[in-house]
Image (cartoon, rainbow, N blue to C red; front, side, top):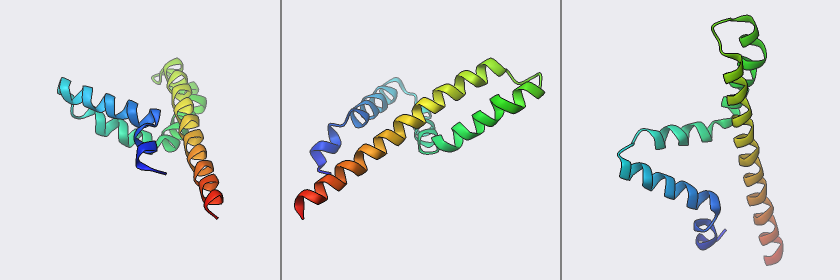
Length: 100
């Protein structure tokens, strides 16, 4: 993938704009936290799925509705990450086939 294509991807633009805004507002801890959560979204989704589907029903102090909402958000982010990875791999494969 060329640098220009990489820098104009919507995910890259949104991440850069969000990071710049957070730095301007003085929120320096949120960017690393989001980066780590996004990098490990599969694990986060698994943990939330287990917590909301089984643990919340057994433990009264766990908020079942909140965990379900968080699970659905994590699932959406995880699916978007998988689709983005798929699109990148497909694009790379198509680019390699064109050069051969």
